[in-house]
Amino acid sequence: MHLHGEVTEQLLVSVLDSFTGKIKQLPPVRSHVKRQEREREIFYIDLLEIQGKDVLFRVGVQSGTYIRKLIHDIGQKLGAGAHMTELRRTKVSHLSEKDRLVTLQDLEDAVYLYLQESDGRLLDFSIQTIEKALDFLPKVMVSDTAVDPICLGAGVAIPGIVRLDDFKAGDRIFISTLKGELIALGDAVLDSDKLIKMKKGIAVKTDSVIMLPGTYPRYKRKDIGSQ
Amino acid sequence: MGLPFENVKRRTIVLREEATDSGYGLNPEERSIEERLKTGFILLDKPPGIRSKTAAHIAKKILAPLDVTKIGYSGTLED
Image (cartoon, rainbow over all chains, first blue to last red; front, side, top):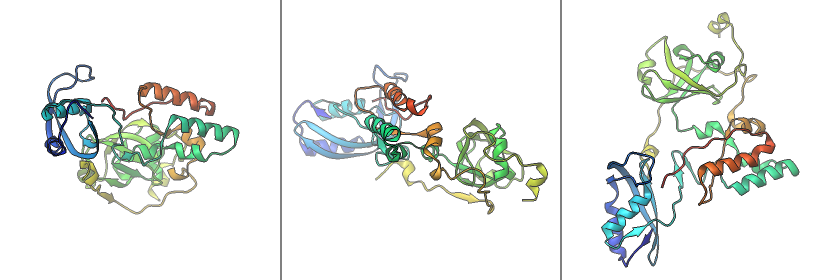
């Protein structure tokens, strides 16, 4: 944030503090959403560094908060005015800068080392599993016998479920094997506490299938009961 | 101090103990790089000044020699 005039640290701290909690925000003229005032929550603002009129801070916000606008509004309240000079996302969902963040240059080096020097370490570091990206979703883990039908688009039947996280009807679900592999994504039909009391029926409607059919065997119906 | 979801502990319900056949599938942590190039994910430190779309396009070109043909992106920022 670059301030347009002199501001005491004391005033800055108190104004930044006043922006935590629920705030009203009008999306900027050039935005991807309708331009009407909306409420967003600011979870925290941590002042990190002041260098003359340049202020570095860390802010945790609800999704859909415009930071450029937030800084403009902070500037108005300070009286001096302010604008955003730089913005860096350090966290989103369960992922942060500490989770194997790589640059395009790293990626280029990784490919070079892998192909030219048979050194796969950097590539190995750079390319993570799809499961890691989706780790924020509630999981439903199913029996080996239930895997192939789901790969073919079947919903998750209640008897096939071995363990599950808490969720509500309509939630996006990570449909997983017992080994933790992503089979497919789906939408919960019921709340998890309701479905654990049921013996049959469909718990999750399968939507996008990631695992290829045939990864797990197609069990015959008679085998399923005897397992 | 943190974000709201960081303080929520997810409850897992175990309905039964059941083994999985080690003859099929594989723990994601043991998945080969070749497999991860088919379905994987990169946490990319995008340089300022270029669009996310451009960054994804460059990443696709970089990975093309490894037969990567499709790349998408998500979690980007409108400032």
